[in-house]
Image (cartoon, rainbow, N blue to C red):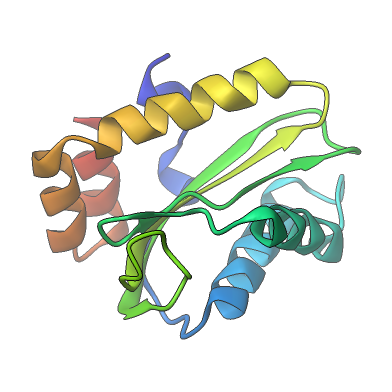
Amino acid sequence: MDITSLISPDCVFCAVPATSKKKLLQVVSELAAQHLSGQVEEHDILDAFLSREKLGSTGIGNGIALPHGRLANCDKGLTFLITTEESIDFDAIDNQPVKIFFALLAPESECQTHLKSLATIAEKLSNKDVVKRIKLASTNNELYQAITE
């Protein structure tokens, strides 16, 4: 699976002003609700993220988190790449604050596709040069280029 099949330039946001885990998830939920054009309510998206976080933090370490959730009333997946102005506590496995967020939403019926998407993103983020470029990006376009090139 290619990363460009998962993310589009209009789903990339650089230097978002979120100061907590919940605030970041609220911002992503609002953006997702706008992209899903009324298919799913913002509060249902937030509930999906929060339900997943209750199982264990999606902060994977190295300043990166992969918040994700599955939606019952959704027929397409959606992926966002977001960096925050400041690193925030996200209960990551290495206890380090997080500044890079790849947020995924998938229809409940597409479990395998969801898992493949997570694996593709994790593989891309295992490249230290890619992560460095993401951290240095100062515009949405630079951020998109960092993850897709």
